[in-house]
Image (cartoon, rainbow over all chains, first blue to last red; front, side):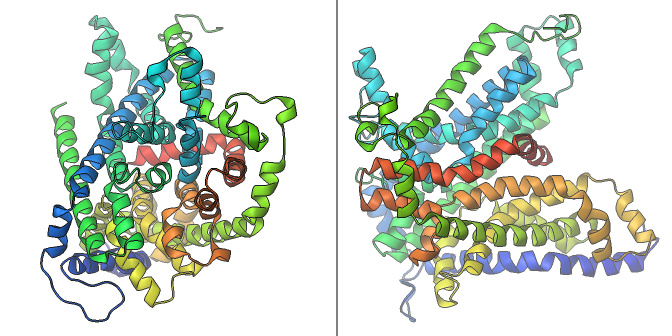
Length: 300
Length: 282
C-alpha cells in the first residue's frame, strides 16, 4: 500500500482543504452555537445584556417546577410514539402490498402517496385544520351525514384527541417518503429466499416474519432513527395545526415550547435549558434504537 | 395479463391488495381534493359544503386575492433566491467534503465524517437560540446569504453523508487511475468525479430543495423584514391576521404549492428514483 507515499501525503493535505469549507460552516453555524447553548443554559444570559452570571441549574429547576413541563414532555413522547410506530408499520405494510400488484398500479400509488411530501408543513397544517374543524370540517360533517355521532369530536380541542390528530396529519404528510424507501428495500431482497421458503412450505405470514423483516432490517433501522429524530424536533406542522401549542399547553411539544420561551415570552434561560433536555432525549433515544436494531441485525 | 402465471410467481392481480391500496390512495387524495376544490370555491360556500362544488360556486377570486395579498411575485423571487444560493453552496462544499472523505485515507477526515453524521441526530432547537443571537450581532439576520448559510449548515450533515456514500460506491480503480495519471485532488474531483455526481446531486436537490422551498421555522426566526419573507410566512400570515379567512388560505395554499407540484409532475420518475437512490446509500 505504500507504493506512492508522496502522492498519498499530498492528497491528505489537499483532502483536508477540500473538507475545510463545509467544516467552517458547521463550526460557525452548528458547533459553536451548541457550545454556547451548553454554557448559557447555566447562566441568566438573555442575549441583550453584555454581562451575565452563572446560576447553576436554576433554569432547569424552574422548568421542572413548572406545571406545564410534565404535560409537554409526555405530549412529545406520545406524539413521537404514534408517529414512529404508525408511520413505519403503515409504510412497511403498504410497501409489501405494492410489491405484489402490477408495476403500473404500484407506481401510481407510490406517486400519489408521495404527493403530500411536496407540500409545505404550513399548507398541511391548514388543510388539516379545516378537516378537523368542529362545525364544518370534513370528518364531523361526514360523521353527521352517516349518523356516526361518536365520530363528531373536537379533534383539535380535546386534550385526549389533539396529539393523535396531529400524529395522523404528520403521518399523512410523510408516509409516501418512507414508503418509497421501504419499497426499495423490498425490491433488493433476492427472490431465491422466497423460493427456498416456498420449498420448505412456509406460509406467507411466516415468510414475512422470517424472510422479509430480517432482510428489511437495515431500512427499518435507518427509517426508525430518522423518523424519531425528525418528530422530536418537528415544529412547523404541530405549531400551525395547534395554533401555537394550544389549547393552553395541551397541544404543545418540547420543540414548540422552546420557541415560545425564546421568542414569545422572552425567557431565554428556559429556552436554553429546555433545548439541552430535548437534544439529550433525542440523542439517547437514537442511540438506544441504533443499538437495539443493530443487535437484531447481527442476530439475524 | 399477458404474462402467464408460470413466468411470474407472484400473482399480479391480487384483489385484497388492490382494495387496500386503493383505500390508502383515497385517504391520501381526499385532503388534496379538498384543498383543490376549495381554492376555486366562493368563500361563503367553503364552510357550508365541504366536499362538492356546484358550477355556480366556481370563482378565480380566491387565487387572485391571495396573489395580491401575499405579493406573490416578490415572495416567489425570495423563495427562488434562497433556494438557489443555498443549493449551490451545499452541493459544492458538501460534495467536496464527501469526495475527500471517501477518497483520501485520513484519520482526521474520518473523525470529521463521524462528527458530521452524529450531528444528524441533534435537534435544530439546541442550535437555534444562540445562532440567532450570533446572527443578530453579525448582521446575518434579514440577509439572504446569512439565511442560506443556515440552510446549508442544517443540511450539510445529510448532504455529506449522501455524497460520501455515493463516492464510496464507485470503484476504487477510479482514484488509483487518477494517482497514476498524476492528477491532483482538484483535477480528479473536477474531471473524473464531478461528471458522475448527477444522480446523487439530483437526490440532494429533491430532498433539500423541497425542504428549503417549504420551510417555515428558519425564515420565521431569521427574516423579520416583510419584503424579504418567503411564501410560507406570507401564507401563515393569512391565519394570524384575519383568522378563518379560508378563501385566502386555500388560494394561497395552491399558489405556494404549485411550483413544486409542477416540477414533481414533470419529473416524477426522477423524484422517486432520487429518494430511492438516497435511501439505498444509507
